[in-house]
Amino acid sequence: MRRCKVCQIEKPAKDFYKDSRVKKDGLRSRCIDCLTNGLPPGPIPISPLNKYKVDEKGCWIWQGSVGRHGYGRLKWKGKTASAHRVVYEIIKGEILKGLVIDHTCSVKPCINPDHLEAVTLSTNSQRAWDRNHCASCTCILL
Image (cartoon, rainbow, N blue to C red; front, side, top):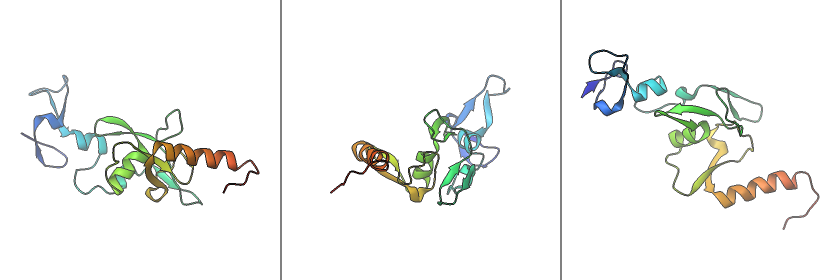
């Protein structure tokens, strides 16, 4: 067991990064959560993800790193993750297996949890097609 220098919680050694540059036991003084989030663990407010600006439509536009498909990216629990998925899990809970997160606002860098919905891949694809196709055509959907 080891005490994190930031959150002051005693945790097992597996919760700390190993670093050959660190003397003594080779473990960093801050736990993985505190290194990746910058905040002590516990009830997680939206503040670890404060890299966003609110636009006129109410979208929270991610201001951090963006991947090649336009979605926000960040380090979370030691891994690179999509910002909208992290926000969804923090605010709304676990994303069930087989579901993806749909941006109901159609804005890829948006991380507003009110604009995110867990749906099946087929539902997400159909919604994307409807938004993109029918915005520019004159077809009548029943």
